[in-house]
Image 1 (cartoon, rainbow, N blue to C red):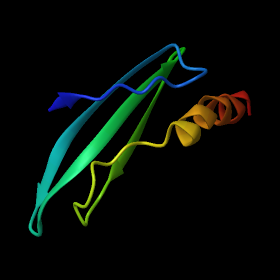
Image 2: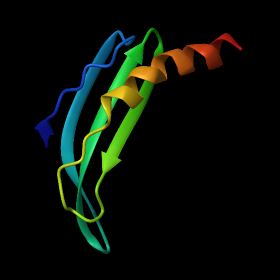
Image 3: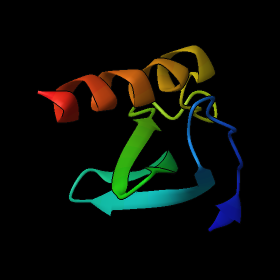
Image 4: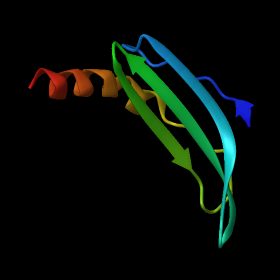
Length: 75
């Protein structure tokens, strides 16, 4: 496991890392990001099954998620 930070706009705290997922078809690199906004925690992940390049959670996608979570929680 290796730190791979990603700052998510709108979140109170974020942490990110890369690791390797293994299964019956081999190993694949994975980038995980966990976001906390208030009492809500969300997890994002990206992986490359072809193992061609190190995966990264797209920052533009992650930045939109806190607002979406807030909208759902507001009802």
